[in-house]
Length: 202
Image (tube, helix red, strand yellow):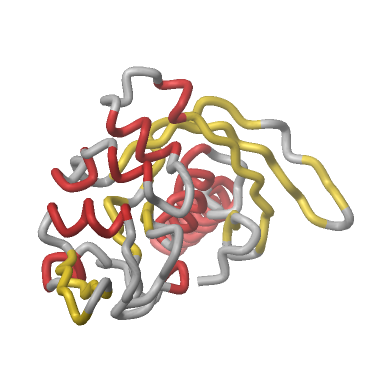
């Protein structure tokens, strides 16, 4: 009788394990799997803004964007000769580059990061389909920042002298009242280790 009970327990345990393996795979087409993959890619690409003219300090030409940053305490500006100035990043400015190493950022780069996008909600996803031997899916999602907008980034003048108008920053500056502007689409590829956003190899 004891042997029969033990055998039944083994069979039940095996069945439970089989169900878990079949239904709990990380590469299953689920919202949680999509969220994990998209967040991983977004974290490697922080939201940053920089000057149109330079991406390195020190810099020795007048720069409208950097002048705004001087007023925010993120950059210093010093006269070094007749009609010559030099900009240097401050400790506070360097602290905004909290993701140096990601997105190709280096210490001293003239980029200032104001947050990282993360998935707020999975709106919809297409049916997985096979393309050139890969299973792909298109996911529509809304995003939010992982932090409140820093005070220095709330100044609309920042976009005026930047390398390009930052639509993500504009959305946050306006209080994100229009959720459609925070909607994005990601294409994901199914791998043995879960879903992956193409180009995200970290």
